[in-house]
Length: 231
Length: 65
Image (cartoon, rainbow over all chains, first blue to last red; front, side, top):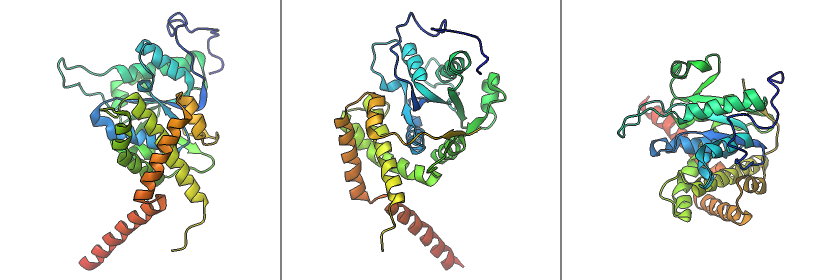
């Protein structure tokens, strides 16, 4: 969108008086916009495994320590990433009283779209969902956008990540992603214990998972490159 | 439309820098992954295990026939 409105400096309304600490923009970083709740743990691990498999570094708001306003943290992360992935599959009402829908994921998608339309045309955003045609109903403003349907399971996430990202050299398969996912699932208790965290949705656990996924990806690609052992 | 990724896989050092954590911590995670892989076999072993599962499923089907 190179012919977009000429905006120099700050985008009005997107910054709060320059208080956002700018993170370096990395072309291999992907902002992962997903719900943080225990029922989403499998898909959380699947996204970390799959995104790492295609050679990107997942980033999430939970990794940044408190102190900054949450909205500022989100904006800072979106700005620092070349890609963002927005999972809109949690549209049901939160059962805890008062029953409320979750607006965070679509709101953050809106921020990413604004960022791309107004400021950074080469920022690429993706919408993932569990149920076909539901996103078009719950958020009709995105009509005409490809929505990647993962059917609410890890394998679906891998398939859709392979559809969304094509690595020109060494494209991972869904089986490669699944292996990393299985290993991450096995490692999660250790990674959690190492940090004393009670939930996988804590900053240090998330970072440990990202490192572990990267180490596993490297191991996998090294094994692929080496000759098969004689059995 | 799929995005084509042409950047190389980021190194562990780069990932550490991106996430703003120490290289020592990365090494610690690498050690953990290494230990886990030794204890549970490497990727090829995983392949072989799933292959065996497929094989035994075929065998079971064979017996049914």
